[in-house]
Length: 310
Picture 1: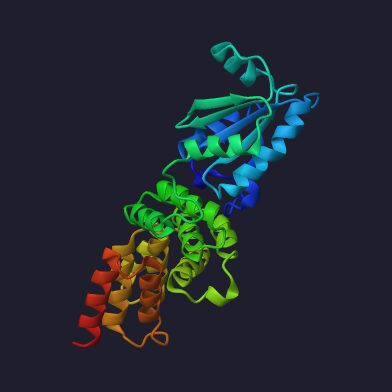
Picture 2: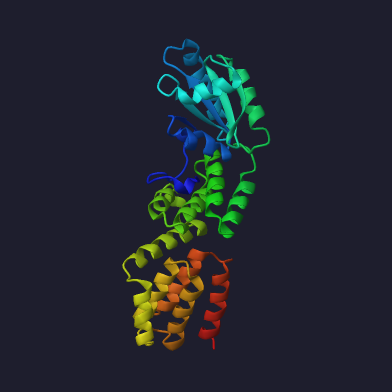
């Protein structure tokens, strides 16, 4: 499971996402799978446990202070005893409060009892040693995420963008990157929700505008017919520029960038001024959405220049 697998409404991590309650059915996603991305503390507690009530606020404070390097998941063992019983059988510990640290999908450390804040902080520091926090090199993480996205690994990119946002919820490049991950995997609603978190004053930044253009093009493509029908129309009448234009838009939505470019270039070659220069303008929108370094953009710009200046 990656951040791209979340349901509607999961746009971007916020401070509240650092701390949550879990149940036996959700433990796998909340702890085991999440700990593949970053360490997770599990606070096993019960309503009748006085030391638990002392420890939980200390844990929450320390996790927030860690700035996104670790998450806290709380489990009421009265309501959901199975997981704690399994860990107790493996470790021999039967008492609470008990805090287990998970990383890489397995428990890696633990402590028992209502320990002081300094000890909790030291425990987290040891667990997260070497991880970037609020003062860490977020630019390096953004570079890793951008590289993963460029390589077509939207899932890994989304997880890294989420790490950045856990440390800096208002990081615009990370918001734009995460929105792009959603858009490229067809999760248009999540992409729009994520992009809506960008302040109005920064909505003209290239990365933000590129994702907005992607979403606008996806919306445009929704009203078109199936690609096969559009291909048949173009085959029947190569001079039907509107059908060819619609086909290019549908092909772009299907991820066939080079084919989409070819059809728009064909319109420009046959009739540069058709529909108030619509084909060239659509190509420019494609290039903006794909990014200047994309192979289809580089090739498309060269071919467009050749046609326009021939």
